[in-house]
Length: 459
Image (cartoon, one colour):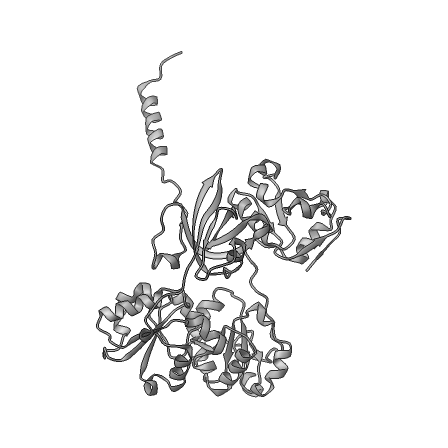
C-alpha cells in the first residue's frame, strides 16, 4: 500500500478543518421574545405561554413564539407555583389559563423533557397611588385627553398595538422606551398613564419606573390593561394598523359597515357586512359565536357615532376584541387602501385560523373512510389502552402518545402521518413530537368517538 502524498494529506486536513469550522445549527430559543424583554432564562429552563394540558398523559404544551415544546410531568414530584394556593397538583395545572406566561424548569433524558417546576407568572405589585382602576380609565377616556388632562401610553410592542388599542392611546413600546421619550409630555407634572397586556405584564410597570427616573411625578399604571378593557369597551385601530395586523397577514376578521346602504354601495372595505345600528338584534342572531373570539372592526363614514353604537352592542353581547376604525371609511380611502363597490354581505361569517399542522374533520373523514391500502397516509391513534380497547379505526397504527418517542421505529418515516386521539390534545402533542423528528405529520384537532366496529363520529 503506497503512502499518501503530501498534497492529498493537505487536502484532507483542509477538508476536516472546514467541517469543524462549519457553523453549528443555532440553539433554539429558551424563551418567548416577549419574555426576554424583562427576564433572563437560566439553563434547563423555558419561558413561554402555557398551551394544551393532557392530564391523562401527564403532559402539557408550552408555546415559545412559533415553536411548541412538549413537556411531561410526574404528579408526585412536580412543583406548580401559582399566585393562589391550589388543592393539589392537578387543580394547580387546571387553574393555569391557556396563554398565561409560565417558567418551566426541566430535566431531559433520551430527548424527553420532564418538568420539575412550573412557575405561573404572578400579578405585578404596585402601590395603590401608582395605579388606575378600570372605572377611572373609562371615565378619563370618555372625557378625552384635553378635558381629562391625561396622556395615555400603550407599552406593548407595535404588532399588539396594531391589533387594537384603548382609544386616545399612543404606542410607546417598553422595549423601545428610551428611543421614544420624545413622545412623553414636556410637563413632568402631567398625569401620565401606561398600560400593557394585563395584571402579569411587566412592560407598563417598567415604563412607569423609567418615567419616574426621568422626573415624571404623576405617572401611573392601568394594571388590568387591554384584557380588562376589551371585556367592557371597544378599542380602536387605524387603517394602516388594520392592514398590517389583519389584511396583510390573512388573519380572519369580521368587518362591519355601519353606514346607510346607499352610501356603502358606493364603496366599502372588502369583505364588509352590513350592520345597521338600529337592527343589531337581528345581526346578532346569526353572528359568529362569542366563544370563537372573532376580531371585529366596525366602520362608519368617519369613526363616529354609528360605529360606536354597533361596537357597544357587540361588547354588551359578550364579544371581546371589538375595534372601531379610526377616521372611518374616509380615512381608509385617504390611505389609498383597496375599496370595493356593490352590495354589502348580509351575514357575518368567521372561520378561525386553523392550528398549524391540523387537518379538517372533513378531510380526515374522507381519508379514514377509505380502505387502509388506499389512504396514502398512516392513521396514528395515540390514545391510551383503556380507550383503544373499545374500538380502533380499521388499519390504524396504535401507539399511546407517552410511548411514542420510545417506539419511533414503528412509525414509517417515508409515509404521511395523521394523528388522532379522543379530543385532539394528545394528537397535537404527538404532532409536535413527530415533526421535531422530521416526519411529514398532521393531526385531528377535534373530538372523535370510535366504536368497536371501527366506525367513528367527529364533533
